[in-house]
Amino acid sequence: MADIVTKATRESFGEALCELAKTNEDIIVLDADLAGATKTSIFKKEFPERFFDCGIAEGNMICVSAGLASAGKIPVAASFAMFATGRAYEQIRNSVGYPHLNVKIAGSHAGISTGEDGATHQCLEDVALMRTIPGMTVLCPADHYEMKAAAKAAIEHVGPVYIRLGRLAIDSFNDPDTYEFELGKGITLQEGDDITVIATGLVVNECRKACLKLKEEGINVRLINIHTIKPIDRDIVIKAAKETGKIITVEEHNVIGGLGDAVIEVTSEECPVKVRKVGVYDRYGYSGPAWELLEKFGLTETGIADVIREELNK
Amino acid sequence: MQNTTKLELKKLACKARMGAVEGTFNAKSGHPGGSLSAADIMTYLYFNEMNVDPANPKMKNRDRFVLSKGHCCPSLYAILALKGFFAWDELKNLRHVGSMLQGHPDMNKTPGVDMSTGSLGQGISTACGMALAAKIDNLPYRVYTVLGDGECEEGQVWEAAMFAAHNKLDNLVVIVDQNGLQIDGKVSEVCGIEPLDKKFESFGFEVIKINGHCFDDIEAAFNKAKEVKGKPTAILAATVKGKGVSFMEDQVDWHGKGPNKDEYEKAIAELEAQLKELEGEC
Image (tube, rainbow over all chains, first blue to last red; front, side, top):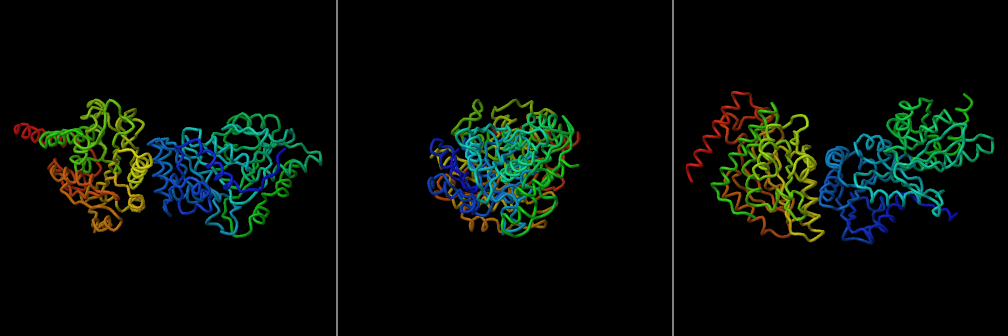
């Protein structure tokens, strides 16, 4: 097992773009005055002639990307998740999604872990918004190594992709020597038959820690990491529903329209079981240090372990 | 670039207008007013300005056209049919289920359409992206986009204008079809946009004002635009909404409805008379 890398996925993504751009001349990166924060600045430094700052004008940036894609480029448009998917939602729907253009949208500072900036910048709706767009692939990688692999897959995939990036530095848990990323395929991190936890993004490692702890208590949780929220891995969800019954979903997102609902859309059609959603319950966040907020919203190891125990005791 | 005579252009534009009337009549809906006001400009673009090949609609180095005011596609479709991108007969299927001719342009369904548009303000940005791609690759193609004057109320038009000037997109030509009307009434009364020339100038554009129905003006403007270096060009074209069909001219009601049978017959008769007169000039 390689050393643990402590890094925000936004940074891993910025590094990955640089590596990919060395062999792929079609990659063009655009930002909306947030290059320093989204970490596309890493790309800008290495490939200034392929970087375009659009200024604080996200709608225009998305449509410029659509035009670039129509001419054969692979544009990566980055901003905070809130503005990339919220402000420019309709541009994404009509100028990227409808013509199914090869645009990659990177939304950083997603989720409550954006921290001190508070509710206006803590995007809790991006996954829901992007899931509604036909043909859009929605990615939410969980650590440094997964982000690197996801970035490569996003560039290689022909069609629109939304990729969710976090601000907070987090520990890696995947082993780069054995890790394999396949678009649309979930990864079982821990086998178990008592109950299933399905998680995405930054909270996956918290779930992993919770599951290890519960194992010591004799509770065998199946833990599934979903890096591709759309198209979701239906098989892995159905198998879990059939084999373990109850499912708990965990995400740093509003429980409306996110991973939890994506899982329920599968179970309700294929194998109805109880699905308990852990996430942000139809409310806004607020300012504070990221880890304190995650704790408050029950999205850390302790909170997640408590919910698992509670569900098993019901 | 071809060298179509002015007379030939007038005849083609007249036929394009007939196609727009044909389409909106069969669709029982659509936008004849703006289709007719932009018909001369788009006819000129496809028959005397742009390097396009109907046999190879996706040709890499073709000039690009984006109808930012996507609702005016009935005349664009007619022009594409006249140019040979698809059969004229398709026009009667406008807006029908399964048709290649959608209510607003769809680049994946209609040969010759370079960008899907319809949501106002977005086409000009996509045109900027195409022009930027040409600059990045040092390719010679040019990008043209037609906007409505009401469309200039969209903030994104000005985001795009800033972007175009900042990136020195001198291969981009923005044409504003200034027919003075939008759905809710006169542009000047809904939410005035003037002085539009000064706005584009201050955003870093070369501005050319023309009569959008005069082919001499149109030709001079596009020729001048080719000589402009280091900045984009905006051609502000004064037009008449509904141009060519007497009872549709300058009538806001004809923004977004199809003609009924009587109106259709009257409109086609007027346009046929115009065409006949033009043919008499041969």
